Amino acid sequence: MFKQFALIIGVVFLLIGILGFIDPLVTDGKLLGIFAVDPVHNMIHIVSGVLGIATGLARDFRPAMMFTWGLLLVYGLVTVLGFVMTPDGGMLLGLMHVNMADNVLHLLITVGAAAVIFSEQRRPVYH
Image (tube, rainbow, N blue to C red):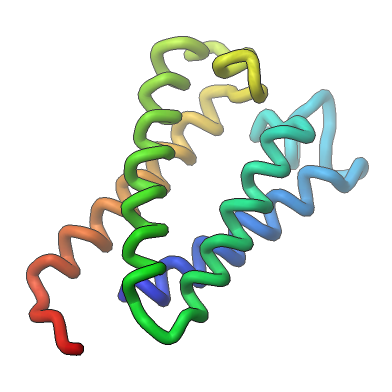
């Protein structure tokens, strides 16, 4: 399940990152009028997407497992910081714009990663 999760979330991240650079889809710094975006935010999504796709396509499940743990930790931290530092929107750590929609989406990504990790811990590992 790690590989499937990494591949699916990787494709979604890559598409979101690319869409954030397409002018007609971005109004007043918001993708589809909802999510705050800027070049740094878009590049983070593109890099996350490429990593997710690469680990999802790897022969072994371990890179995808590490990617999923990375999502849990990094996006978990970004979620907490977003809700605490920028509940009404603004610059997160002076790096990228986020708003409440981003914070909720980051929370969903964190919960999704946690669900995959904890569901996989209940399964036996076969080599």
